[in-house]
Image (cartoon, rainbow over all chains, first blue to last red; front, side, top):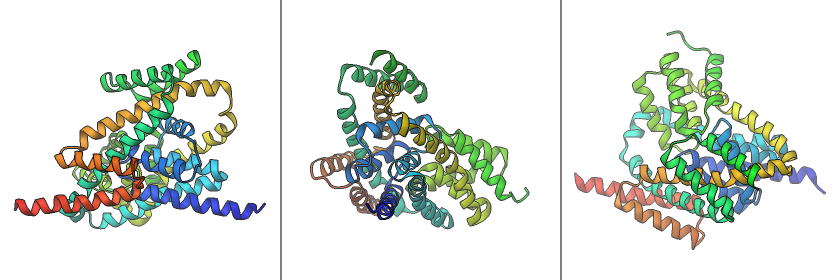
Length: 180
Length: 183
């Protein structure tokens, strides 16, 4: 078995996957999830849907953006410490370079009607992709009465009671411990 | 104002990175408190200009803010150090969890806890989706684009990256054109 070769190939595919995630995810936060899902589940099968959701939960409970947390975690799972370092750098690199470039032309860029038009076009795509992800997640995770009940009550609490997401995850974890 | 040292830029963003749960918008008040009110490195007015740029660039917002503010404060070095500071806390924490989790995810107790957490995560993502929908879909054409993206991805399997590029182009022609007509 050629460990050296496989290791290098893993690092390279991690790098380019997370580079794409970093470069094409607009809107930040959960808006990045569809791209992460596409790269890590659909294209590379580094994770299954259950593991993916677990990482999102861990990302929510720890500081830092979901995309970076996922990069670090998936990178470690695929290729150990060097994998996590590679994926994390790759996901940050596009923002770093693009924002640095924009820093030099701040006013012109923000005020530009081209920028505004392009972003107005991207926003609905981000919403659409997120809707698909929610549908796929729901279909995969909400498969029994317990999960369905937890999901619906949690969403209701978020929408109407503004309870902190981490508190909701903690309560849901306790319910899982008791009822499953 | 004294010229800030690299190490104090690093430690400030490290602190921001360490205490930002939920990412993105949750960190704005923390950054504002630390850098605008606390250190006075950036003026209030300038801070809002910066937010505009970070929202229009791809990637995690906290990283974008760190790059931009770091650059404003101390040029390229400042940007590099600020980014490192903002990313390092989550990198170290997740690395620790990953090392632990690879060994404990099979544990029946952990498995039970995640049986409860998984559906709650679906709710969190759905909530984020609903909020994003309410915040961003303000024009009639937006709904058409949402439907188009859903159909193209779900039924024709067109990749998210390509869809982002297509919709950016659509936005360019749709809205750029309209503005000219209005004049």
